[in-house]
Length: 324
Image (cartoon, rainbow, N blue to C red; front, side, top):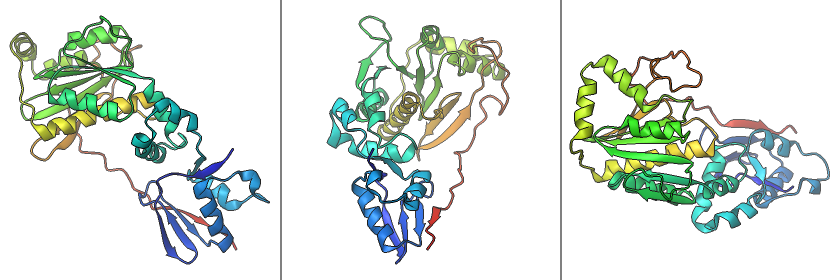
């Protein structure tokens, strides 16, 4: 099996024998003590190399593999034919190969997306932005519906419910009972709430949020009933609609790709004007809801407590030193 360097890794020489692969601290690798033979090997790896062509086991190849900088060369050739949008999606494949270690050159991930159907329910700019972003990112079928109906709809991998003002937990509950993952997106006055993303039986549902809000505000059930029964309309500002729609699309993609837990699971992401800042608000499962299988005690932050954006530690580039 041929191997190659991860597509998309930028290169910069720090000296005659030191080469940096990648710029992002989480992705980059620093190669020190390179010989002319090592440099030639790196150049060969750029286009793909069969390890059997090496006359002896090579330490540089082993170290690059351990650092996650090598992937099977053009392993996704068959996947590219499935996707059918090679030139358009090539930047996506290269990016996701860098983000998710172990997904090869990214094309198999995009091929899996091409086989998925996502239903976007709702009207307006936010719903348009969600559907457009999902299609552009390689989702095979993005079905748009003004209302949630089962007629003529194959079982979707996920349903996005875009609603004005407040979320209808009863409607989302029907999806939960059918074991369909779903993402709530609510357009309010001056902001958009993305989440929670519900994997039925695993994550807190929209009814959990209503129960928590009732505990914090006993008048909430009456307010909610009025808002759901009356005319619901919220203005959708252009830029926040585009930002929230793409944030929602990323949550769906993260769910379907299955490489990590989406940030919107058990939380809402509030996109606010004027600067488009995103606040993550965690919501644990409510003990009186019964949506978890089996129910579990919930710890962590108090319901609805805001958290600032995560500041992840950014390590220095991994250093690979070649011994003379």
